Length: 257
Length: 293
Image (cartoon, rainbow over all chains, first blue to last red; front, side, top):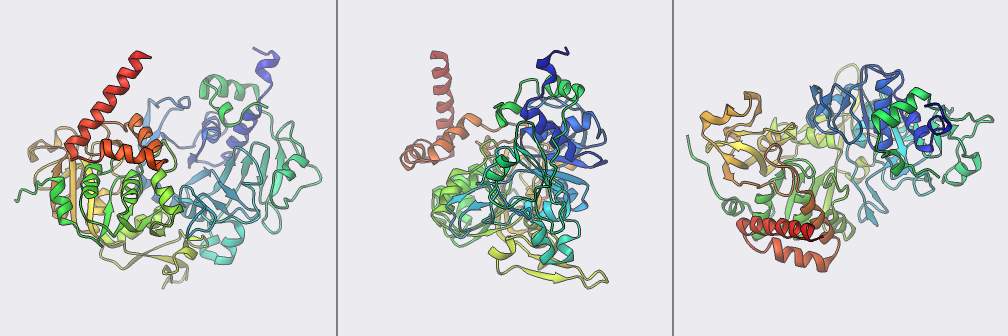
C-alpha cells in the first residue's frame, strides 16, 4: 500500500485538501460546500481535523455520518429546511464555499449574469444567497478552472460582497463580513494584505507563479516566497480514495494534467 | 365548514391579468405545475410573478405571461440554468426585481405579518441595492444605530402551491423533508389555491405523519384542487421524485424554438389529463427505445 501510486497525490487531491483546510478550527458550524471538490474537502475535514462540523445531505437534512459522495447518508442528526438554513446563515454558525462565475481582487463575486444586468448577454443563476452569505458568515470560493474569464478586474454584478464594497457600505455591512480563502485548481489565495486585496497564499505542485499571473485578470499580491500547498497525508489520501470519493468524481472537476 | 374543492381551470378563471401571483415550491421541487399549466391555457397575462423560481417561471416566461418577475434565481436544480428564464432575460422579455434568497423570505414574511417591511443585513453593499433603486435602508432606533435594508412586503393577489395531502376545507399537509415557503406564500396572499396529490378526510390527515406536517391552515385557503402528479415534472417526495428524463427533454426543447414548438404541441396543447397521458406515452416510448437498444 505504500508504493508510488498511492502516495503521489493528484492535483484534484491537493485541491480537496486545500478546501478541507478552509474548515480547520471552524468549530461546531455548518460546512456548506458547493461543487464536488469542496464537498469532498468538507467531508475530509470532518473525518480528520474538524470532527465537530455539521454537514447536510444537500437538501433539508443534517447527516450524522460521512457517506461517499453521491451516496445517501444513513444517519440523520437534524433538520435544516431552507427557512432554517437561511436563518442559520444569519447566526453566523456556517462557513460556505461558493462557486464564482467572476471574482475580482477585492473578493466581489458574480453568479448572476454576464454583461449589463438590465439585459444580460448571458443570464446565469441569479444572485441566489450570495448577498446574505457574504454579510453574515465566512464565505470562501472554489474555482475549478482558474482563468482571466473568472478572475476579472471588475465583476458585472456584485452578488457576493467583497472587502472594498463592504467597507464602503459601513459597519453593518462589514461587521460579520469575511472571505477566508479562494481556492482554484492553481493555488490558494486570501486577502491578508493591508488593503484587503487578493494575495497568492500557496501554489499547487507543478504550478508556477507566472502561470497564475497569466491566468488572472488583475494584479495579485505575490509574496517573495510562495509556499507550496500542503501535501495530503497518506491517511488523507486513503480517506479521499477509499472512503469519500471511491468513484473518482474529483477528477471530473479537476482533471489530471 | 365549506367544501373548497375546485378544478385547476376554475382556479385560473379566478385569476386576472395584471395580478401579482406567488408560486410555492423551490427550484424544480414541489411546484404547482398543474395550476401553472391551467394558467398557460387561460387568457390571463401581464403578471407579476413572485417565486423561488423553477420551470414555473420558465413556462410562464415562454408563454409571454410575465410582465415583472420577483426572484433570487430560476433553476431546474439538476440542470443549473432554467433555459426559458435565461432566454427571456437575454431578450429583455420582462422587468425583474432580483433579490437575495433571504431578502425574498423576509419580504414574504413582512407581507404575511401585515408589516410594510422587514429589516435585514443581506443586500447591503451588493448590486441588489443598485439594480433595485426603490430599495431603502433603515437605521436602528436603538443604541447600535445599525443601518439595515428594509425589504418591502411582497404582498400577493394570489398564491399557488402544491402539497402532498389536503382535506376539502383547505388544511394541507407536506410529507417531504422541506416545507419550502408554501405557508408563507398562502399567508402573504389575498387568495390562496392549493393543489395536492390526494384529498383525504380530515380524520385521515394524521395517518401518514405528525401534526407538524399540517403546514397550511384552511383560514388562508380559498380553493383545493386534487391533482395527482400535479407537480410533474418537479419533485413531490415521497409521492414522486423529479422526472429527470422528462426534465432533460423539456430543457433540451427549450433551447431551440423549433423543438419548443413541437414539445408544446405534444405536451401542452391539451388539458391536464392530456398532459399526463402524453407524459405516460413519453415514458413508454423511452422504455421501448431502451429495450430495443
